[in-house]
Amino acid sequence: MKDAKLIDISTQVFCKINDSSPHSLYTRTRERSVVESRRMIWGYLRANTALSLTQLGDMFNRDHPTVLHSMKQHENAISISRNGIPFDAAYTEKFRAGCLQIKHKIDEIEKELVYNQYMLTYHVKKNGTYVAPVVRATSLVEAISEYEMYNVMVDEELVLAKLI
Image 1 (cartoon, helix red, strand yellow):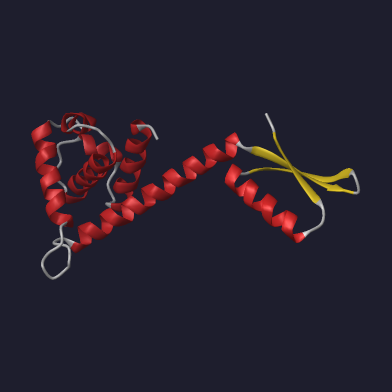
Image 2: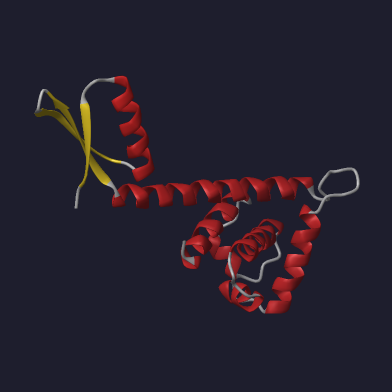
């Protein structure tokens, strides 16, 4: 997935979780919700992309020392204390929830791309003639597993054909 798309998704998700607007990330405000949104976005992107601190800072008109300081605060907040509890449990919970939401959004986008690549048609062959053509979008893995499952269950022949 392209970094720009990941930046957009992470910005939307973490702003929604922290109840802040994406526009406020570019301002000089020190509101907790905005600062935490920025910190979570940078923390997520730093772990999941090859963006440098300078590039991360440029996203919201900040310099790399600001990003570095924010990254240290992020790491401290999600680090685990001796008793096994995160130092900032509320922050950590929001960050993990955001990471899961981003993962689901990315999975949906990738699933949509796979479905667009594989439009497969199913024809059931019975007594030498084709009956009941069914066309649907699916992934190749799904089509093969259905093909194998269908042929085991019935005596009819299932033909897979990739549409262009």
